[in-house]
Image (cartoon, rainbow, N blue to C red; front, side, top):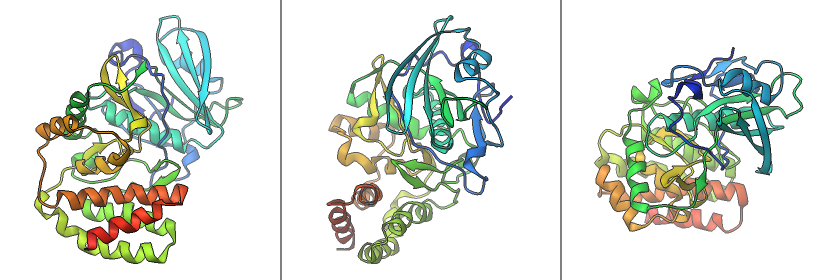
Length: 353
């Protein structure tokens, strides 16, 4: 049996507080120094607090349907509804005789995307704040399967539109304030158990003790290296030299679980409760979650409720916000090119003014 990320099966009742998931997601990746990503899998079995990645794991022979019937204590699969895709993955809903439904994605890609997504969703799920689907398996398909090279199985949530902004702000802040589910983060380190992606861009998450150095190296300089643009690199290095000053008012920064790619398309509700999906999860400074605020549609009610739970550090807040925006603008430039370069230059020149 596969071990890795372990938690109860849905029949235990401990996972039943999440309804059914009709959305999709995607941040994924592999661990730094953990071997080939195609040889890593996660499986949710017993202890929900155990978030580990096991190398060399692969689903037992058979189909995805058989894996669900064999491992999730929900009875036989009575219906499989195909519907939707993300361009690199196909989506299905599996209904079982117990009435339990599972959202499944399959892909011809290696398992790294699903592994990163699964580990991130489960880490957020552990906070018991926002409505997050619990992931039961993410990794390679069963040997001999015709269903691609990888798959992920999670609770199926009935996903709705945007809900109350104040409640979303409050629940997001509570998620950021929650005790980390991962041992390294509880010890004060920044990063995540696996690398993943932000969009299609690799996002390195190797653990570091210092938040500012993590962010500058794993986020800003990483994007600058991908851009291979001398002007951006020159400006970026000057920004990195100045950046530590902007964090001095924050004191000791504690690792918070971050969604990592929080824009309007990844936000909704489940039975009226705020929900997020399609993450690029890591443990970092809570303010970094606002890096996609330029296309997230956060209202003043959202911010008021958020900062009521986690008070705002006013001094140099705007400089830090711009630095967090910069990562995502650089990422968009690396993904899409075009006018995003000018916006990156503008942010950096503003920070250096």
